[in-house]
Length: 223
Image (cartoon, rainbow, N blue to C red; front, side):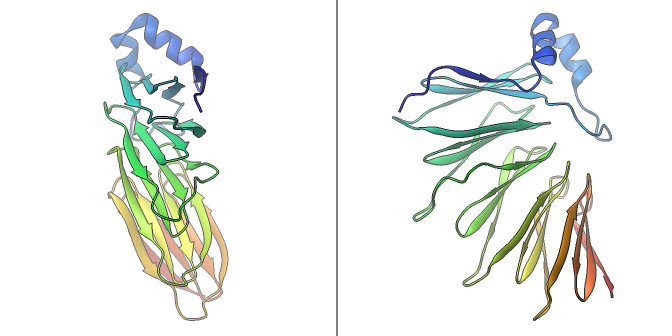
C-alpha cells in the first residue's frame, strides 16, 4: 500500500530556522555531550517511494528507498535518533549520518508496535531478539534471547537502556558501543527497573544492580 506524503514533525521551529539560516545555525545547534535533555534534532518525512531524514543539527538529508508496496507502520523521533517500523524491516538513522541502518525481519517475526526512544538510544522488541540502536555511532546492536528465556522488562533513559530477562540484564551504552550483560542468579526475582539519563538500576529480591552508561559497566550491592 502506498502511503501519501506525510511529515512527522518533531521540532518545526528548529527545523525551519535551520533551513533558513543554514550551516551557521546548524553548527550552533550541535548538541554537547553534557546537554541534557536534548531537543529533537531529526525529522522524518514519509513519501511514496522514499523515506527522508532531515538533520536539524547538521543540515543534511538522509534518503532510503521504500521497497515495492512496503507499508510504514510506525514513525518516531527523539533527540539524535529516528526510527521507522515497516511491515518488512526496522529502519533507524541518527543525526550526523548520511545513511539509514536497516534490520530486516527474520522468519516468524512480525512488525513491532513501535520503538522505545531515548535521546541517543532506541530499543525495538521482536519475537526472540531485541534491537538496540546507538545514536552516537548510527548502528544497531542486538540481544538474542536463548531457548525458553523470557523477557521481563525494557527501559530506556536519555543515553542508556536496559533489557531484563529471567536470566540476564543487558545494559545498552552508546558510549561503550553495545549491550553488556550481567547474569541473574537462579530463582532471583525482579522487583523494579529504572533507567535515568546515564544510569540504570535493576533491583531484585537479592541485590541491586547498577549499570553505568558512560563506561558500559555493572556494579552490584547485596541486600
